[in-house]
Image (cartoon, rainbow, N blue to C red; front, side):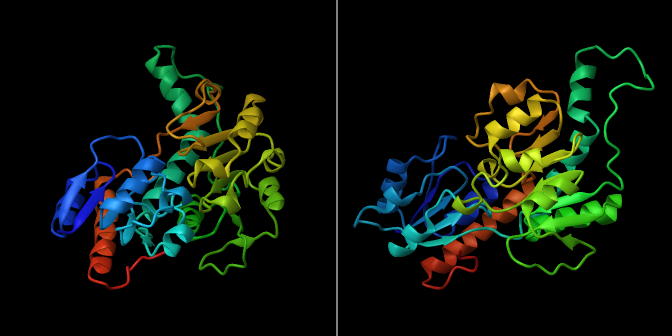
Length: 315
């Protein structure tokens, strides 16, 4: 009997689709899979559907008794999986591109607007019963329309954010990408990160996670931002040096909108007490239809490999 492990409680449609392929075990806890559990899963299951935080780093593959043929990641980012070690062990790794693009771009716009217009701060103020009526100078924020938008990483999600910003809010777009990029919209590529950080009013980080982008946005990059400018991160938490960001935010010079954090689900108290940062609990793809589409893509990848075909979305 084909054995399939789902490392979290995925949408019911995903569980049902997986059950059509074999005997399914749904891990009953919400915490990410640790290395020892990952190694055990690789030895005991034919396929694994996993997600962010499940630790399939190199040590998990240090065994000769790997049964697993595919790790199908539920999500586009797979920096929690050592793809090189998986390949060496004969394990396919797949992800779910495209399904997450629009949902993640929508959350980026949500964070942009909330941070520019101080929406989360305003809601806390109203809920606390502190509002005494409209005042001409009360809680003034940044009018986002027409401001310069800077995109760090002009992939699918970066382009979707840029399109929303430019066509929806009349924002001139500049972007920094590690390679030359041609995009089908009015946008100007800058040569280095420092140029982007110093020229943009609103910066959105959309690069993939991984060693190459770890702390890409460091203290030096943050120091280039103009006073009053905004940075939004919807990529991976460790792309931004969290300690450096906190230090910059504590000066009150800039604002930030975050959907991801370095040590999720831990959010430092130093961030939680600041009014000039908007905090969301990794809501990037948190819509049922999006999550169901992600799950179906993961199951389709599993089905292909179990039939000795190539996974449609192998990384």
